[in-house]
Amino acid sequence: HGFLQQHHSIIDKTFQEVSVESIVSNLESFQDDEFCKTTLETLSRQSPTSLKVTLEGLRRGSNSPSVGVALQMEYCMAQAFMRSDSDFYRGIRSVLVEKSKDAVEWSPNDLERVTNEIVESYFAPLGEFEWKIPEIRCETEASKL
Image (cartoon, one colour):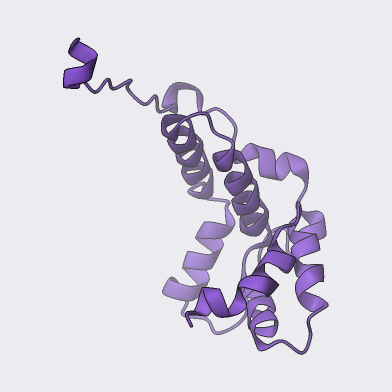
C-alpha cells in the first residue's frame, strides 16, 4: 500500500477542519500515531501565517469558478509572500543565508496571533500590479458549426 492509502482514514479525520488550530488539535488527539506525531512536528516548524494563508487559499481555490480566477488568486498570494517583511523572507534568511539550525522567528509566532486581517492581506488586490489572465478561446471543429 502507498503512503496516502495507508494513512487515508486518519488524514480524513484530521484535515477536514475549517481552521489550522482544529487540524492541530485533531492531530494531537492521535498521540500514539507516528504519522500524526511527525505531521505535528513538521507543522510546528512552519510559519503560522503561511499555514493559515495556505488553508484559506486551498478553500478559495476549490471554490473558484475557473482556473483563471484560481491562478489570479495564487498570484496575489505569491506577491504577498514576497513582501520584504514576510515570513518567507525570515525563513530564507534563517535557513539559506544564516544557515541557522535554530527555529525561525516567525511574526506572529503562533497560530492564535494570526488574525483574519493578516490572512486577508494575502488575497488583497494588487492595484496597478494586478495580473489579469487573458481570456483564451479554444476553437474546435465543433465550435465552427
